[in-house]
Length: 129
Image 1 (tube, rainbow, N blue to C red):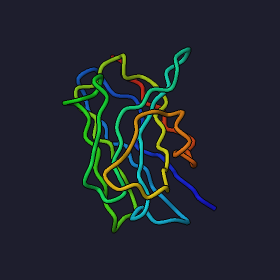
Image 2: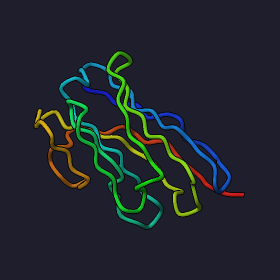
Image 3: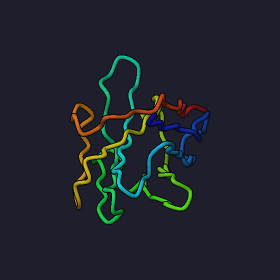
Image 4: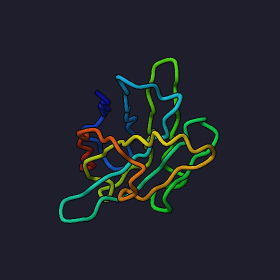
């Protein structure tokens, strides 16, 4: 069974950093593109970043460009989201999702895209002083 597990969330002060992890089991990230998303209370799910299965293409939403960095460690079967300069608006539940369509040099920030067939349960990030 496909499974994604997010970790690394928590409480951080404004201006701080966190690194989220998305670990995969039962399938290989070598053939999987990964997207990171978040959802704050009362808001729609928002696409933040994605990386294609080759690891050569990355995308970022304007809201996180220059602050967040996505990376992939195939040996650990994990995708990371390094988040810097966090602010209260970054408070949300963060999710990763898997696209196993094996489209090279392609990934999407659209959470409603049917390419994302598997989702993790999310990890809470709270930015507060």
